[in-house]
Image (cartoon, rainbow, N blue to C red; front, side):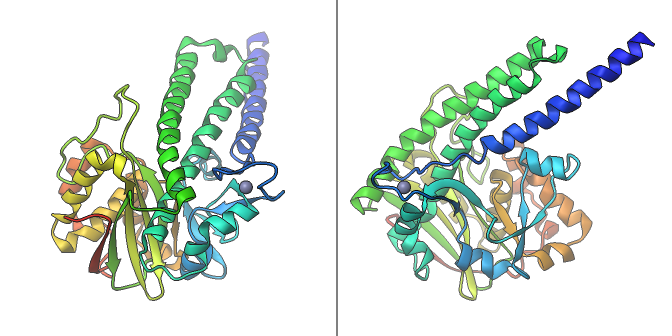
Length: 359
Ligand SMILES: [Zn+2]
């Protein structure tokens, strides 16, 4: 009887600790600060807003139905809401894709060329498409480091918390986040310089234009580990801190769409090989390669609800199964990808534009 009571008490303590941690983690991912390079109490407006990482009017509105889109996310909150399963959540476009990383004044000023003007593939617009996911990633890494501290504090009263395995796991997690943050902050200095000087000559972009509208939009940054032929570009497990990074944005442009890759010239070494390997794929396969890369690499996708709803369960599960699977093993699988895995026949390549880059 005493053993049973002790077990029930432990279970109750664990549940309380879990909900306490969940609440704390929510707060850790919603802190407010302005990441503009000139941010200060004098320069910033008082209000830090929910800045969009995917353009609200130009992208989210285009794929929204009744003001809502599906958000695909593996965040702890999303997993909790879906009983541990990754599944799209219906969200209003006001809330979709936001992070509290800009004051109102600096968000409006910085992204005006992207938000208030049609996308024409200018160097500045391509830079801005890359700048936002970089800053959001910095925000997320800082949030993740905070959340590990929250987890430690929430579970410290539980006997399991002293387990060397759990402590080692949390230590490794923090070490990884801190290492990535150093890398991101270093890259940020180059991006900030482009921003402040309004000179984008050191930014490269390749824009893939598609004849038709897209049913999904995304924005993200990634260290390309291998090219599209399976050749290793850089070892992500290396203690070498300066990993090259590339961004991808899938956007709407009136009745067509585009996928925009962008990187800074300091990241040429891996990014040029990565993009060149994509450009050498058969043209009809490029859309599926881009789609797979985005699903495997990023957690910032928004989907047209009716498009997702009409997919068969096997196609839905195939997409969900790819999330976060950007590994060498997946790459080998990707090169033999069944083209019918996801129906992208509506997404036909029409043109490729190079910005500050030639092949
Ligand atoms: Zn500001």
